[in-house]
Amino acid sequence: MSSLLQPSPASIFEQMTSDLQQQVEAMDKLSHAVFQAQPLLWLEPAGQGEPRQDGAAQAGATEQEPESGGRQDKKFELYMDMAGFSPEELTVRQEGRKVTVMGRHEKQSPGEDGDSFVEYRELRREMLLPAGLDVEAVTCSLCSDGQLRIEAPRLALQPAEGKAIPISLQAGEGATQGDTAAKEEKELGREEESSSQET
Image (cartoon, rainbow, N blue to C red):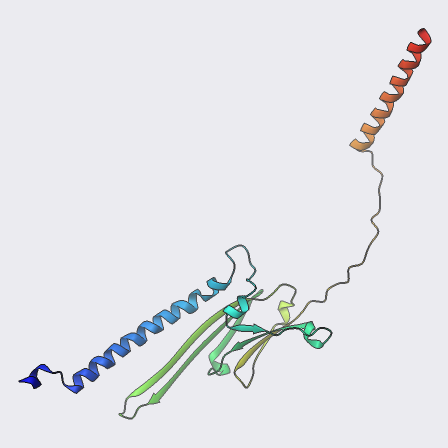
């Protein structure tokens, strides 16, 4: 009688497999929602147009620190960890200063029981390149260690040179008011002279 009340091992395994599958599907939906919302988490509110200082780190990217006086300060470099993705599975798009990296990896493996397993990963990352870069010369390469490198040369800054500002003469309000004040003073001086002569 006790064997009737206990579930069979096969039904327990099926229930666990079903529960696990539901959890995997829920995690896929959640991760997709997080990747869709990720740019909103690190970009400033609409209209600002500039990322926060920690924007690259929140987007999963690291900026190479420039070495003063070396070649490094002439270009901007950004690294993103894309280990597990091949170049064919990655897409990089640029619109002005905005760079979008998308990756999609799908691998099907046969199981021991004749079943097959599917490994699926998808990502989308957006970042805003800093001002002062030549956005027409942005390049991208995938290193052997799985690091995606985005490079752009920095625009050459023109040295600030002092320049002379010419002074032009114009007959404007200032000159008219000055002339009027001078005329009033002369007239006042004449009136005082005439009043002193009368006495």
